[in-house]
Image: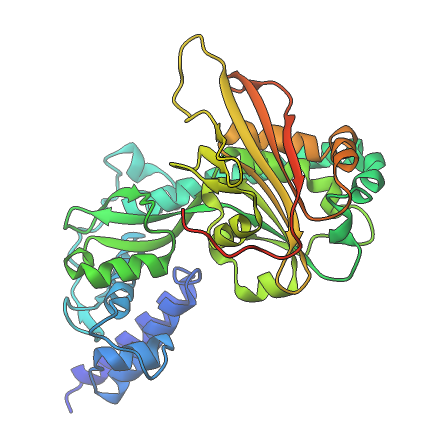
Amino acid sequence: MSDTAPAAEDEIAQQVREIRASGILARSKHLDRLLEFLHRCHLDGRVPKEFEVAVEGLGRHAGFDATQDALVRVYIHKLRRKLDDYYQQGTRPDACRLILPKGEYRLQLAAPTDPLPSSKPSTPLEAAPRLWQRIANLARRHTRLLAFALLASLLLNLLLAGQALRQATDDTPQLRASVLWQPLFADTRPVVVVLGDYYLFAETDGDDRVRRLVRDFEINSPGDLASQLQQHPSRAERQFDVGLSYLSTSTGYALNRLGALLNTGPKKAWGVILASELTPENLRNSHLIFVGHLSGLGLLEPLVFAHSGFRLGRGYDELVDKASGQHFHSASGIAHENAAANHLAYLSSFQGPTGNRIVILAGCRDAGLRELADAVASPGGVAALDEHTGGAPFEALYQTSGFGSATTPARLLLHRSLAPQAAPVEGR
């Protein structure tokens, strides 16, 4: 064996260690596991088949069918892009690069192709600190900017929550004793707040740069995207998951309004998850509070409307009473000059599959959710519910109106008791 072969082996091992230690794969245990698996295969001198990558590298079951699932190709593409991101940070610019050749499931060293950075930066972006150099990569820039915006929003909400906590502590016992909230704090089950989120995926124009982030109403999770790519394999090199979703601004506002209620007293909220992260275990073992838009219910949607006396109309801005056929319309979000917009919000409380309690706070749009959150986090708002409901499962429809962000307090438009057991799930 030549001296160059052991040197190459050592270089690949060193690169793998440095990449994994850099944290660039920290958000995805699947990508970290995949890189480790491909390195083991390299050390063993073998190139794995797609089935082996799925089962051994990604932990899929032995019945995995590579002809029916594009999962491996999607994750290989994601890992290839992560490697590109890593080297575009300027890490070891003189060293060879670790690559995944197109169409192959193996690691390979390649000579650096990008020019070395000059000693004198030529643009303001190049002169910026390393953090901003990393953001210069478009794919990571989208993700990081949104992450920073979310972090700033979170910090602001935490500051506001501190103020709200001081103001609302005296009201907390009354709120927790209300028909709406009491079942959540009457036992030792954990309380999980579920935030209605919307899945985004990245798309290129066939090159190596992300050109846009896409919200497709038919694709609501990485699994949905994988299924679409399975049906349309030609898109696999242009569309891929970047682990990104977004929340409406009113969701943060509502969570802040509920902060004192959830985090003051002998029992605190167990945690906060996204609707896209909701599992059957959560549905069985926890009390749930959904906060978001009706369109963000995700897996909860069939369960909610199985209990409800409403069904969805032509979209999430319209609810139809199942018994009377009456239609309730909410503003579409398109501004109309000199016309006050009518906004709806939906509230329900019903039993889950194991006797747990599920509470739904859902606005058709931001204005409805904000005003609903104000109503259910105030003594007057819960007192109105207590007056009209007898402790049984119930639902209520609220209405608010206004121009832009200036809206009237939510008005209780309709309320009724719900059957303890859900009706058969109806189609839309």
